[in-house]
Image (cartoon, rainbow, N blue to C red; front, side):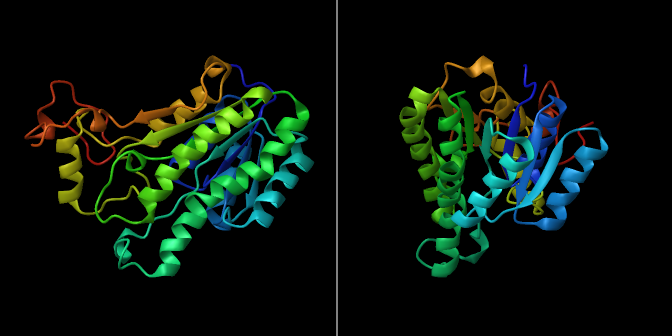
Amino acid sequence: MDFKNKVAIITGAASGIGKATAYAFAEHSVSVVVADIDPIKGKLVSDYLKRKGYRSIFIETDVSSPAQTDRMASKTLKEYGKIDILVNNAGIEFGDKGNIIDMPYGKLKRILDVNLYGYINCARSVVPHMRERKQGGKIVNVSSVEGLSALLPGTSYQASKSGIIGLTRALAIELAPWKINVNAVAPGAIATEGMGAAHDQKIVEAYRRRIPWGARGFPKDIAGPILFLSSEYARYITGQVLVVDGGYLASITPEPLVPDPHSHPVSPEDPDLEIK
């Protein structure tokens, strides 16, 4: 995949899927803008990339603020002169604070402000430049299998991830005349430091028994598909949702698929524990 001279903004790039995506892009010679609300972790990622010889800057950004996403786009243009790729990845969840009915309204709204309106804000800040250049562009939105199904406790997180899919399709047809591809990835159970962190071994084992692949995924398992959708190999793909879940949604089998995840004939790479 040829990404020579490309510039990418990745939101939520201080950790998890965003960080893995930043590393993947940098390794393919993309100039990477690490955008995140966390100034310490975000700068660490960008500094690490620069120490490795890659081009990167960090821009502290709360994507729920249109003023901050405008600033993110402006600083990127000042530094690199263009924006070729936008990866909307920043996301939050407060599943431990209740469900749709019981969660404090402020937290319910904050999820939508970051997860859905944040994506809209970033698009509104970046797309005008892409259209003006008339050189095409790539937008990849990180949704979730929870945008296609529900998981208790139900919160506005599921609504936001479903909304991202609708946003992806709407932008895809709106921006197709400018040859701007807009697609989404829907990760399944991914072991990250953030929302994917599961410290309860019973929960981890329950997922492992339900996933045909036999293990949760790594952040790099999502970074690869994002890289593909941002490449010219995906030039004729737009408005699509690529599910990356180890087969999780493919099965409607009511009981666990594998009584013992360790019984797989070929042990999968496993972020949760070492399989012997």
